[in-house]
Length: 505
Image (cartoon, rainbow, N blue to C red):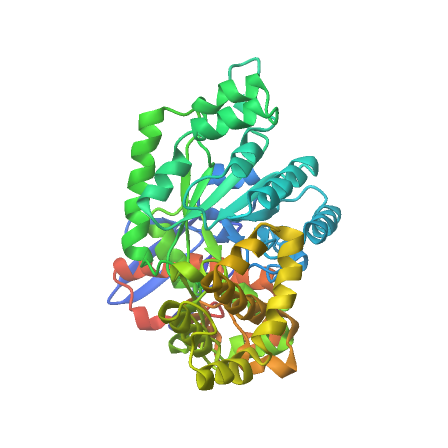
């Protein structure tokens, strides 16, 4: 990416032919060339491009050109098309399997594998309180030889995740442990990172061995490997988030991972990347400069053509500002009061979900809520009767968790929670489908990176949703990262920061 003088300004061009550049700066004017000038009054700086950022071993492990992957978004928002586009662009994508039927996930894996033909991809394993469903997914991933998973929302590792990790592990003739199934774990807390940098839990290993799901040889190697190959430090992001600032969290988690690495003495290095808030080239550069092995994008991908959400939502995302996001109760951990980050623009989801949670906390049953309030809930929020929704909810749990039905029949507060969770769970699907009758009930997961990206590309072709392609967005972020790195070098050498111009934002 040579930098050349042009009309008393500095323009950075996309070209990777020259490994270094020669620079001299006097009175704020930088002279940059690809050849050494006469005399000794110059310095050489590295000529970096998008592929030069990030951990080399990370890129080698997954077969990547660039140290960037697109994180999973449930309900297939991180679609097969998105995963394919990222893989073809030299990055990697994680398919959003959360909330999808097993047969749908299987079909999408086949589609991804056929299109990428050996290029990298991941499938998301989202923490699931239904252990049987989670194990069924893990077995299918092993059967289909999925090379890597992105583990999301785990507080403690599950047997299904440990099974995926250990199945097929062996020691070769050189004494190296070969691990065919890679795991990248998203974490935002120190205690969770420790669990993933540690070996698989002994109790899970013992249970899997006893049930015959792993062999004695696989179990014997478990204490010598970390549960995860890589850790994504997930800062404030769309969807589930602890709201942690990246600038505080990333250095702390990198240091902790290094200490745990030294404690266990693994053959391999456990790397730490950064996700949450990555919406501009400068945010990418900031993450890499703090030591991130790779970066993860999320919200900005949801607004791209390849995203699995509706065109209606994509248009809202393209108009979203940083102040247009807020926190709201989530479906999967509703009773615990857990929240997700969502858009508050053009939807009443955040307010409605919060009201339902307040009713749940205050009353022991739906029938205990005052009649006028019950009528408002059914007509204004649920837009259906409590009894009718409960009938459909029972049909759902009869398929996935039959034991839940008698529990709810005996516990009216649980029954109320399940019906309210129907609204919260359905709201994200209404957004994906673009249901015109449910525009004001749509749950649109989104972080502030979306607003930052929109502001960054304002006035360019990427301002319009229909022009955003996930592979091109990823490359733009990394090209801009390289541009600003080299620009900052020149400024530190005395160049005038106002003299720079170029096509890269």
